[in-house]
Image 1 (cartoon, rainbow over the protein chains, first blue to last red):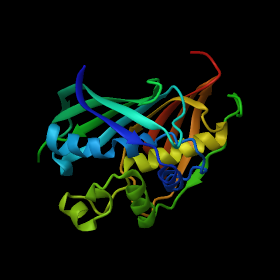
Image 2 (cartoon, chains in turn brown, cyan; image 1 turned 120 degrees about the vertical axis):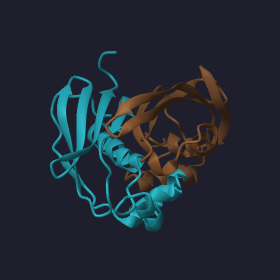
Image 3 (tube, rainbow over the protein chains, first blue to last red; image 1 turned 90 degrees about the vertical axis):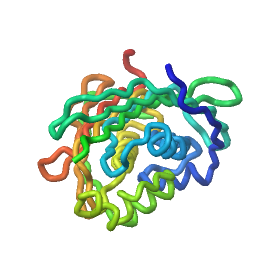
Length: 128
Length: 126
């Protein structure tokens, strides 16, 4: 698979708690199930605007999936790797849509063990 | 942790979604797409107002699943965004199907499904 980006992310306790409060989760040292959004936010921003050059005003989040292998906890450093799975045009109601699927694997940088595998599908709707 | 069960949890009402909720989620997640906080930008893109981040709604759903089944209960969680969520929306999360460790969930505004989700819980089967 085409590796789009690799980076590391420090899981700070305050950020884990802030994110938990924002999604109505109990505050704990284990990160909320969708916490990886925080680790991936800058990558997604660059991916959308620079790498894939999607038109933000026409771009919607289609699907998001997670496979949880082991908890992400405050104090960990994550090693993150984003891979392009597919970037295809599909017929839509208003014309051809671009459908981009990216997988991001978040691993414990210390042990190398994979913790979370995330799949995101982004749709750029047809130009008006 | 509560073990997976065949007892269907009762539907739960979430929201109403406020602008403050969306700004808090933007700051916490780092997703500063202006469609989610800037009404002028949203209107220029043809929307009536700012729309909630899909992952805000997905995060609320994940939190509720953990309240039902315990922290760390999910092995797999997948969501499909079906319709935008707006400021002021009251949402109802219901478990439409439960089959051992597999759940189908829907998040509705009135009769409209805004998000559907599938969950596989730990402790039962592959």
